[in-house]
Structures are given as structure tokens and as C-alpha cells.
Image (cartoon, rainbow, N blue to C red; front, side):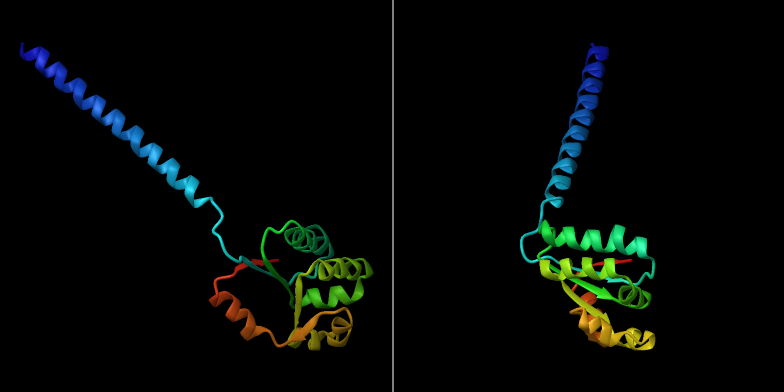
Length: 152
């Protein structure tokens, strides 16, 4: 009789562990599904383009920026031209043409005046339709606002 009670208790204990583990796994899956849902509201992305590499510009920065705007992956997109990218942009007609498409799509494009002055290209960037300004403080504000930031 003791053996039957012991066996029954063991089965009850093992069953309780099994079902509680299943319930926990389902709860974790449910939490993951909820966290992947888009949070309503305006989403803001800043792409900080610092690379002087043409392939990086064409195959990543410009391609992603344009598609993110065109496909509404974010509500508000700002492309910041900083450092060597400023010089590259003024030397490459294909990049300038692509930049026009990005501007026409509604992306805000800004350039760091401190950097572009060092390269002697501030006026050329302004002629391309870029807002050239000292942007360090504004970039700091973007970070404080917890905007999404992609640095390339």
C-alpha cells in the first residue's frame, strides 16, 4: 500500500513539474510576441554617415536610407553627413544624384559644418540641398531623445 502511495505521489510531483514548465514556456513565448509588436507613435531614425568609402555609401547608407523612407520603416529619418563622407559626396556625381532622390523622398539631410569647413566643401554641400550646420549639440539631443541611431 505504501508503494502505491509513493508511486502516486511521485507521478503527481513529476506531472506538476512538467505542466508548470510548459506553462512557463508558453508565458515566455507570449512575452516575446508582445515585445516584437510595433510600439505606436512616431519613430525617429538618425543615420550618421562618417565613412569615406563609396561602396559603403551606395550599398548601405543610401540604399537603406532611401528604402527606410520609401517603405515607411520609420516616420522621421535624418541623414547626417559627417567627416570624410562630406568630401566624398562633393566628388561623386552618382552619389549626388542618389542624394537628390533621398531628399525628394522626404529625408532630412544635414552636414557637420566643422567637418565640411575643414574639407573646404560647405558651400558645395549647401548647393546640393543639405543643411550645413554645427551639429554636435543637435546630435547630442538626438541621443538624449533616445532616437534610433545607425552609425556607418
